Amino acid sequence: MKIDQAFGGDEAFERLCADAGERGIRVMLDGVFNHVGSDSRYFNRYGKYDDLGAYQSRYSPYYDWFTFRENGTYDAWWGIELLPAINEQNEAYREFICGEHGVIAHWMRKGVSAWRLDVVDELPDKFLYPLCEAARREKPDALIVGEVWEDASNKIAYSVRRRYFNGGQLNSVTNYPLKEAIISCVRDGDVAGLAGTMATLHKNYPENVLHSLMNIIGTHDTMRILTVLSGANFPYDKEAMSVFTLTSEQRAIAKKRLKLASVLQFTLPGVPCVYYGDEAGMEGGADPLNRRCYPWGGEDLELVEWYTALSRLRKEHRCFTDGSYELVEARDGLFAFTRGQGLGLTLIAVNTSSGDRRMEGCGFNYDLLNNIHTDILTVHAGEAGIFTTKGDYPIR
Image 1 (cartoon, rainbow, N blue to C red):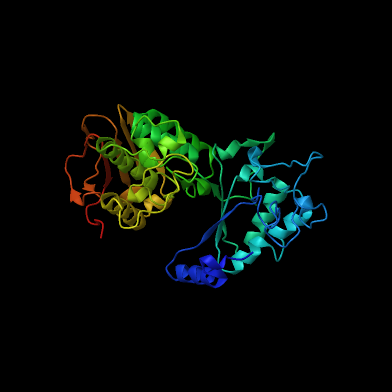
Image 2: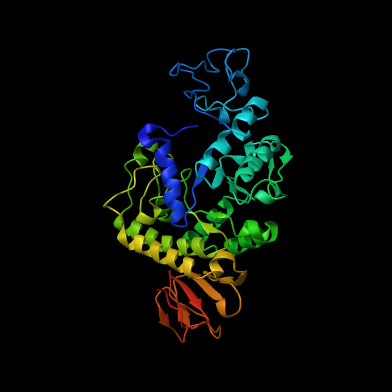
């Protein structure tokens, strides 16, 4: 219910939300409501806090938030004792999070506009509905995105079919299926797999959900995307992986693939979500090796400029926000599709093959990535192209 003074306290947070709002930026919080830390105020396993924690006594006001066994053990997230699992069916806990003066309302009144819900498939409907209602009670346009690793349209969790998109719950979800398909496409040349994934998403997700998907290619739960795309043989030992770095040749290959992956991430339906440092060329293995500090002063400026150009392009062409998607070609290493309609139609082509590809008679005559007119549409080997049907609006 408060920001640690080490991070500036509540005043700094409210100022952040206000200053961001003046720039057209809204702040989303990551809500982790399924579990807490064993040394949190509520559990207090190590007696760090003056409060009587659930671990210390059954007379604690938080005791019924958790599930204890007769032998003293307790339910924990995936069996990890450091992360005691919450019983979201507990009425007192639901009130604490979702009530009129609960956690959700508290932070939205301080300027928050959206929530990303951690492990949302472990939050039962009886908890998820009032949580979403609490957010929209404060701000009717509140955005709520859930962390789901599979197809969320027909997700079954703990033998219950979820109802994320039936109204009253989520606006959208994390797009892990697309992440895996993009990696397989640019690293392994599996353009058919990407086409299949897009067909499934397009068929199963409501249109408003599709355009709000959190398009990711790397996250805090996965290896750094640059390392993944290198195709290098990684050491299995975490200590060895902690000092593992790509060779100059491996890094060059990975950067080239990352440019293709980011084009897809930014132009396919959904909203690109860049894990900090990916745009700066950070490497790293699985958690915690993917969470090193941002390389201030040591960024890969070529990649920073690339991501800046993609961001500007997406901002200036509305077809990438809500334009229709249509597959053009997915064979022999080429994945091509269009976004938008009419004069606003844009063609995106990613060539993962070893040879140049020409696309004859398609009518697109302006290369947005290079800001040049082109009479012959060619996508070079290992490169991507973004083309429009008009030649009078280059990137400013």
